[in-house]
Image 1 (cartoon, rainbow, N blue to C red):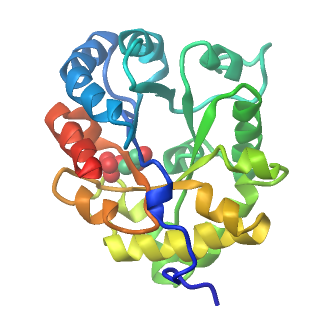
Image 2: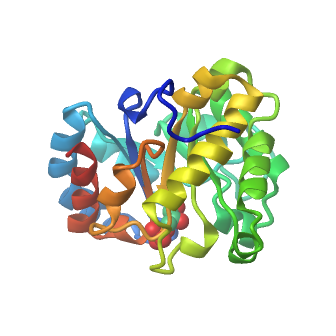
Length: 268
Ligand code: 13P
């Protein structure tokens, strides 16, 4: 059986942590400007040390504004979704080439998209391929719901989501993705997973699936974040775990001092 702490394994010292703020459907353009103004100097100093990558993911409308405000800083802009086609009659959608003009990252397969907008594992896989084809780095979300967790199905569900997300991805493409383990029961509930619990799921189910699909080197190279009620108080507990390479932060990413404190906790 795969261990999560055997001595031969590379630890997260080899991977640069990545903290992304998922603003979800919050902030007008004017509010986005205010938040970036409040974050920019402190986050730039933290990211400039090279020991953390920081990404802000505003709603689509604010992405170009935020991206422009971040120019010349080490902070990156990201989007929260994309469509897989490059252009055409797809009313309401935003294409990978449009996003590639302004941002570096894109969140794919967030549980809110799966839950409220009918996204399936197959859609998620198409979106990942489309993002990579346009040099956008996908942050791919996986995670079990409460019923699945209580039924002891976490490993099965999360492993299957990782396998479906990676379908058809070559080894070197898989290396480019970031995976966010976001147990649905922990999102926006104030009930975060424990550091040890998230570490075990990431080590066994996510890196385990990557090792099966590719090899141990890829399993160790891919960065895996934890997401779900991360805040300034509990962030350090997650960052202390060997398998966890940063966080995908929702609510706390909208409050400048809190998001700065979370980013500071990872460079300590
Ligand atoms: P919260 O941090 O608000 O729980 O949201 C987590 C999340 O869904 C980030 O993508």
